[in-house]
Image: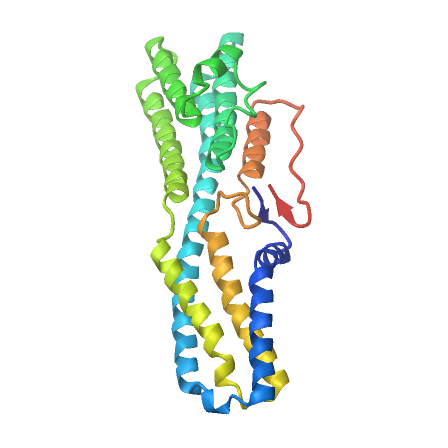
Length: 302
């Protein structure tokens, strides 16, 4: 539910906390190999340096490909939510321009449809994180509408109601054909953004690829001390632990990036973005009592 806003150390610290068990295991293994080397001499079991280097290079290339692919998923999620910000503002602006809220009735229509867009952003954010999508809807939607969308795909139903109300406005002559088409295009872009986010959330990175990388990293950790048995004990221990932990860290960071809606420090800050949309739309409607922006805690926004 969080993403780095100003302090990237938060993400690295979260990664390190997940790897403490692996770190202890690597330290114990390397210490055991060094003890056996000192006591019994393991020079006869020395593993060729070239083979260790080749294995490390292969792992590095695989990790680079994985990290780049996972970053692309993270960046696409952020791009989609950037488009949601723009289209949400566009939606309210178009409503104000096309419906011309001069009477109480038209003002009510614009406000209702704008508030429904705010509710859509909050519900989509919650839905992507497998949280309760109805959590933030009170005060934004009428009680009857909340009951109607409850138990369904809430964000999709809210867009459906937007489209249905657009059709009613056109039938009553409050929207010209061109204006109706432009608003429908905005709804289409919002629908596409929602589908893109759900595709990222529901499409997992191939598990076989993950298992292969993990297996190679474990093999590297096992063979690396045997390739350094002639190195002084301090160099063997520090080098083995550093290389092993570096590979494990990069692997874990890529796992964080591959799912930007998983309540981790590296996530896209969808709740903060939704609050920004909420504030912007209320300002466009001329309201002065605005909700508070989310404040970063330890450099992290939710």
